[in-house]
Structures are given as structure tokens and as C-alpha cells.
Image 1 (cartoon, rainbow, N blue to C red):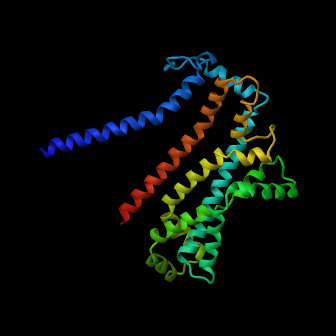
Image 2: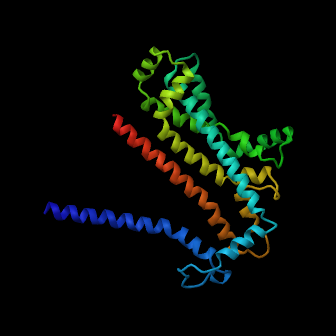
Image 3: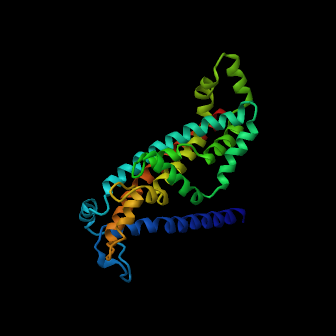
Length: 278
């Protein structure tokens, strides 16, 4: 009886996972199907479920579309996402370690000040931030999309909470006795322990920067867009070419999938490493 109950329970779990997988993957598959076909399939009932042979032609038309500047948008988004991700992970890990394990005057007050910035809606900061960019002469410049986001309050909080539990005080004291400096302690002892948390933060940061639309729309122009801004330009005409939009969305999704696979391996590797050590 117990074996039968376990078998039924396992079957229900597998069925639930299978349904969830199909519901999650089908929109991406439908995106790929439309990107490989012509506009005739839009609104067709029943919808086609087999890819066509127009992907190459659609991608070629996408990169040739003068109003989109898609290639430049891809490069700008890639540069901005990589720069912001590296900076946020580094500074957040360093600040999180300091707030979690170092004792200095005003530590709690500084942490509260950092967390208070998370309570301000992003939309409220667009106007003053735009004024600062104008004063610096950074309109339509890629650094206007990068510099304001090099440090993240959420990242500091996340890495502080992770360092609080992942880095034992005894390990830090042992490194101190061996004559390790504070920065050397961070590089040699703390950073390996923070790798899973840093991977999660890097994944979230890359995805949020890559998908950012409102601020690039405000500060950049159509000839120097990010990828999301570029995709929006395809829908501003009197006639919307859905195959171009779906082809662009498909290409814009590929870097996110690659980053997810890369950081996902780091997360799993860090968890397994921590389990072996414990």
C-alpha cells in the first residue's frame, strides 16, 4: 500500500512538473515558430506549430531595418549589462562583507541609509537623474545607461545577508592570525564563500539591465539605442511587422539564456562545494 501511494505521489509530481514545463516553454517555442514564418500566420487558427523556413530572411531584414538600429542596440545592451553586472557584483560583495563581518563606527546607520534608497520608486528618480545627465553632457551616450547603476542597494543587502551566514567568524579570525589584510581576506577567504550568492546577484543584475527600457528610452535617441529600445522602434510604424519583432525578441533572448546557463552552473557548483566542505 505504501509503495502504491509513493508511486501515485511521484506520478502526480512528475505530471505537475511536465505541465509546468510545457506552459513555460511553449511561449518561447511559439516565438521561434513565428520568427521562422511570414506575417500570414499571425491570427491563424489553429496556429502553426511547426517552424518555417524564413528565419534567415527575417533576421536579415531585421538587421537591415534602418529605424531599429538593432545591431547597435545589441552591442550597447551587451556592453552595459556586462559592465553593470561586474561592478554591482564586486561592490555589493565587498560592501556586504563589510556590513556583515567588519566592526566600524556607524555601520548600522550606513546600512539603514543604503536600505532607505530601496524605498524610493525608480520612476521618481528619472527626472533628477536626467537633469544630472544633461549637466554632464551625457545625453545619447552609453555611459548614461551604465554609470548610474554601477552600485545596487539591493545587491548590498543581498550579499550582506548571504555573507552573514556563509562566512564563519572563526574563518576570518584564523585568516587574521595568519597576517591576512582586510582586502586579502576578502579576495582569498570571503569571495569563494560568496560565489553562489554572487552568481544569483549577477544573474538578476544582467537580466534587469538587459531588459531595462524606461531609462534608455528617456536618455538615448533612436540612432543609439539599447536592444529593448530598438525593439520598440519596430512597433512605431503604421504597419507592425510581427515577424521582425519576434525575430528580434528571439535574438535578444539568446544572451539571457546563455547567462542563465552560465550563472546557473556557478550556483549549483557553489552549493555542491559548500555541501562537500560542510
